Amino acid sequence: MTAKKAPKWNRILLKLSGQALAGGDPFGINGDTVGLIARDIVATRDAFDVDIAVVVGGGNIWRGMTGEGAGMDRATADYMGMLATCINALALQEMLERLNVPTRVQSAIEMAEVAEPYIRRRALRHLDKGRVVIFGAGTGNPFFTTDTAAALRAIEIDADVLLKGTHGGIDGIYNADPRTDDSAVMYDSVTPMDVISQGLNAMDATAITLCMENELPMVMFDLMTSGNLGRILDGESVGTLVQA
Image (cartoon, rainbow, N blue to C red):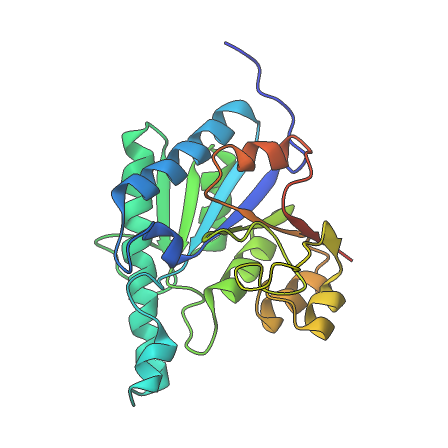
């Protein structure tokens, strides 16, 4: 058996947007896209001695802000979004286990028939045993984004880095939207304060502040380019590093 390589970071938290799981579809779960993401996780796990946890969004199914815009109570709309993240978590779990990777879904909202409750010590135990842990239902509280949930869970499980995978052609943090501005320039690295003060499109302010206060680096990269996860762990410059 080939020895696994030592990664740049030993424990990672991968943040996936729900919309990424839709692939090119306007909504829902695209099986081919979920398979691509799962295979990249498996290839990274096979090549490196690394612990992998994942936080998934739910925007491909439901967004709390959409419900609020339609006149729905914001808290109720956010709880609906949390349920959507659990659907995505189960879809990713199913794909990973088809590839023979032991996986556990932990939900911040109790739903014992389909997922474990989120318990920090249990999550750490799963990671120590080499299982991929997928966190669903955000923080379990309305008014917080899954970006904030990703930062919080990364800190709780003692992750060395938060990797935020993007989609739709965005491969890092730019000074403008590269999809509409041909002169937009991508940063190789920025500080958390740069993100906040310049209003850069990376993560919400609560998530960035959590990372900054806990000295947790974050990398924003193109999730849909196969092999990028491995390149990051191999020490290559991929995407944009956010670090004080």
